[in-house]
Length: 326
Ligand SMILES: *[C@@H]1O[C@H](CO)[C@@H](O)[C@H](O)[C@H]1NC(C)=O
Ligand SMILES: *[C@@H]1O[C@H](CO)[C@@H](O)[C@H](O)[C@H]1NC(C)=O
Image 1 (cartoon, rainbow, N blue to C red):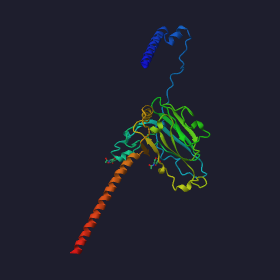
Image 2 (image 1 turned 180 degrees about the horizontal axis):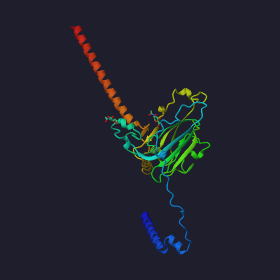
Image 3 (image 1 turned 60 degrees about the horizontal axis):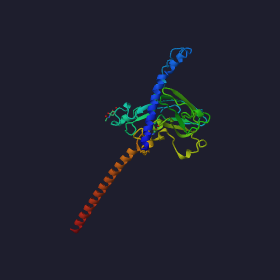
Image 4 (image 1 turned 60 degrees about the vertical axis):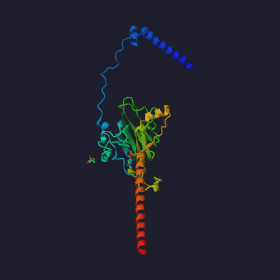
């Protein structure tokens, strides 16, 4: 009864509000007309020149690279001069198993074609840098100067920033890439160049710091190496080779979009924990399944072999016994 009364009250308040707005609209015409009636001085339209036209995009904005052969990816030598390392990161909405994948997964050789993101075979909208997931790996030496131009080619109204995880940004806090805290986020069709020194060596990663873009695919490796000298690299005794091929990136992977999952988590009390992982973009769960199948096959083969051997031994022993007895 109480809630019914409240409903009636609320709807009548709404009706009154609508009626009032209508009445007001009749009484007060739109602002512009009022200004005219007040005989305000006419202001010229504040564009002295024709509309500024956007300069045509430079070619490099579209030339995307995986930077697998970047000159900064080199052996770090003690005493050598740091390099300036330039990258262009184009952030886009993308899809797994896009047209770039041709016949993947039916023809496995097509799955490694450029711009093909097969993931674990799940068709899903993702966000990527340079049409890769993970995005291009940045591999530099300590004290190199990084210049990463991030171009936002997402949807209009969608903004982005990139955070360089593990870099303390001591003299460049405004290059930390946390939207609305250390910089204005990069708007649609805009670009921003991050300039900072790779001052903190280690195995780090970069990722988008805007909405759920990181979970949707905007992430990649950021490796800052030191010269392999015992004085500079205290962990030298712990490994023999520090190769690019040894970099592995692990990512949570969900069947639905991350926004979908977060809304479910908040409003439906759904368990938001991802069940899948991508290891350098191959799924662990499917590996587990195939492992299980392999184990079953191996066990069956072993049992069959053992049974055959036992039967053969028994037959031989019985035959021998029969021969001896006779
Ligand atoms: C897979 O693709 C390669 C290259 O396009 C082609 O040479 C090969 O015949 C294809 N394999 C199959 C089974 O279609
Ligand atoms: C994993 O990805 C990184 C960069 O994203 C690459 O350098 C590395 O070679 C890959 N590792 C394997 C084992 O494929």
